[in-house]
Each structure stands twice: as C-alpha cells, then as structure tokens.
Image 1 (spheres, rainbow, N blue to C red):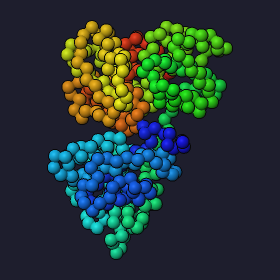
Image 2: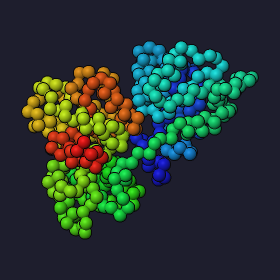
Image 3: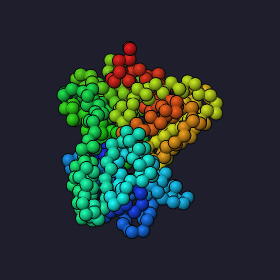
Image 4: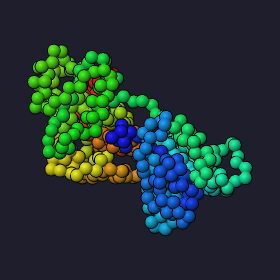
Length: 393
C-alpha cells in the first residue's frame, strides 16, 4: 500500500466543491480528479449527500476531495442536504465555488461566496461551461468539465491555496540523539495488532527529529527507565495512566501525553488549558458535552463515556448531566452546556478542530481536551504543560 493511501483523513488537505444544482459541479469534480467520483445527470439534485474521495494532488500531496449537494436544494430533504453542505464547510481547507459561466452570479451564489470569505476559508470561484461560450473572458477562472479547458489551471490554483504551515507534533522538543519514552498501556480497548493513530504519528515525528522512540507499557516503565544510561528527554504517556506514570517518573524528566500533543497539533492548547478549571464550577445538573472525533464501538471502561464522567464526579462531588457526541457531529448551539471536553481530534482536520474551539469561545463556553482535563484532575497540569509553556509566568 502506498504512503498516499495510508495518510489518515485528518492529515489530508480537504478540498470541497460547492454550488447550485445543475452548474456542472459533479462533472467538474470528476474532471478534476480524473475519476468517476460523482454520479452525473442532467436532472437537478443528483448529488444528495457529500461524496468524498482520497487522492494525491501534486505538488500539494494527499488530499480529500468532497462533492456536495446543491446549495439551492428544495423541500424538507433539501434543507437537510443544505445543512450537510454547511457542515462540510467546517472541515474545508480550500473551497471551490462552481457557477455557470453562461450566466451572471445570482444572490444565492454571492451569499455562499461571502459566507466562505467570512469564515476565512481559502476560496476559488470557478466559472464552468466555458465550452458553451464563444469568447472566454481572461479576467476570471473559466473551465469546462466537458472539454477539460482550464482544469490544469484550476488544479494549480487549488494546490497553491492548499499549502499549509507545518506544525510539529513533538519533534521541536527534541534534538538528534535524544530518547523519548512512550508509555502505551495494552488493554481490551486497545486495537488488536496495532497502535492507535496518535501513537503512530508521535513515533514518526520522533524519528524525523533524529531521536530514539522507546515504547513500553506502564507496567514496565520503571524497569525501562532503569535500563537507560541517561534519562530520556521526555516521557509521553496515554492520559489514562497519568497518575501512575507521574508517581514513577522523577520530577526532572518532562512528562506529557499523546492527547495533549494532539491538542497542540490540531488546535489551541492554551485555550484547552484555560478551559480545564471550569470543572471547579460545576453544579449538580449542569450539562457537560464530551466529544469524540472517531466512531469506534464503545466498550466497558470507555474513556469518554465512563472514565471521564466518573473522574469528574469524584473530583467535584456533584452529579453533572453528561451528553456525548462522536464523529462529525458537533452542535451549532452550545449555550446549554457548562463546559465542553474534546478528544485529541486525530480523525479531524486542523481546521475542524479549530472551528469547534472557536465556536465554543464565541459562545463563551469553556472547552478543554481529554489529556488536559485528566492532568488537571490528577493535579499535574502544570507539569504536563511544562514542555510547551513557561509555567512560572
């Protein structure tokens, strides 16, 4: 399997195509990808749900192409489809707005363009059906999904807008020759035969820094440390065993967790750190939203639905009302919640996670992260954030 196909969805640049029904949007997606990604028909509303496909767009690299239903869909089902299209905006890194090049842009299309720009999403307005024009204006980007006119130019524009700032996971904390110890508990919730995505990504980033990644279970941590000729630069643990690892690890060795690394990598770690203290203000009956980006089968002892609520009950001595979401589901209106606790978001794009955090901040709802809140509840938040911030300030 190629590296392109192994790239997880959350690490791909998300390129979404938007527009009215019957402007040739799906035909353009097919021409752009060189694949029959979307069903094409002269009947309006053929695309009823967002359709996605992973591919590689050179020189950009691994991307996720998304075709969306028409923004002018009708009826009750049509409104639901429009809502799904609006949800796609939250994960879009580059928006391609397709209009019919044979007519003027109308109010609905202009509103869409304005909305995308207000959200600060890089946007390309492309005029389709250039093959139906006698003279193609040079001042705008015209393409033809039928003849292929302008497709290469569109790809170049998308690739230029899609380049993203490199953000390290842990490599900026290491130097060549350093050792990082990764503590990975193996329990019945761990996937058989493999490590979870944040653990894989962390190992790769450590190797990129020229450092050594040493992996052990929590049961073997003390022995592993004793076998080293010099202390590791950092220990990174699964947040669920924070208390045990903290007790074993000498105070002079840096400690953090995979979830906290993801909080910095995907979003605003400082915002998550500030949000953790909201747990102190919880009262009986207050609603707490716990969000997980993946949709794995819940097992006994699940961290999101069982362990976190129990730890919070024990810390506060009160009984909040816990609500749960998973996957792409995230409420527009958060006003009913006293605080939001989110997983590391390894299955989300950076824009999606930042969008969720921004929505919380705009509505005045404290938001934190699994690893951050667990460190806070164990009284070691300052230690676990030490590698990233000067905690004395």
